[in-house]
Length: 231
Ligand code: SF4
Image (cartoon, rainbow, N blue to C red; front, side):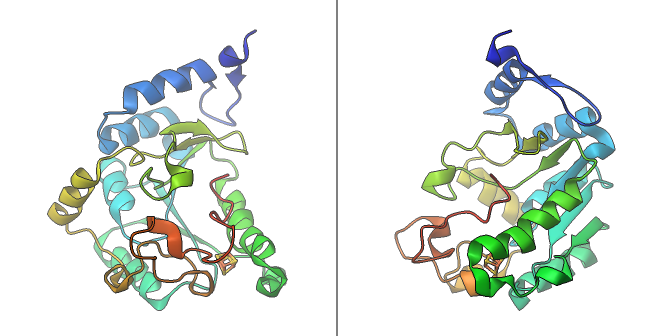
């Protein structure tokens, strides 16, 4: 069997071949995120989760209009800005979310001193692995405009766990994103107006460099560009 036709074994609800994923990506390139989310909900049902860092509520707003019961996963690393936690608080007031807050194993809380690899692994990657256990697919908010390394982000892919990962807003044009956010009064992190174009944990986030990509303030001055949850 050719590699492109290899069937991908999904833990629960469905199997998708690589050629089907290729076709879905071609089909979804100009599709509104709500319709992509609709496909994901119809395909994976309760075996679908949504992961968000609550830098804003764009993806949550889109998804909850399709399925109010979708599980929303927030990784509480213990190092979030107070402003980020306030976005979460405001989101809980506005939306009736099926929220799951995942926290790191207490035994690993001091790993920041061991370096960002160990810290991200303990505070982000392992908790997301835990949250996605038993799921077949998840929604994430990656956009191709985030950074050069995300410029070819697929809308549908298979992650390292073998789960289907769906990025409904990966290819959504910025003008459309901005129009939607204004029309829906999406909750945003006020740090965005203070020069933070991408917001992660406070020890690893600086203001973005003017004229540089959105995520230029993340792990600034290091070769690191991702925490590991999107690998
Ligand atoms: S972004 Fe920084 S503080 Fe947050 S988990 Fe990774 S290394 Fe730790």
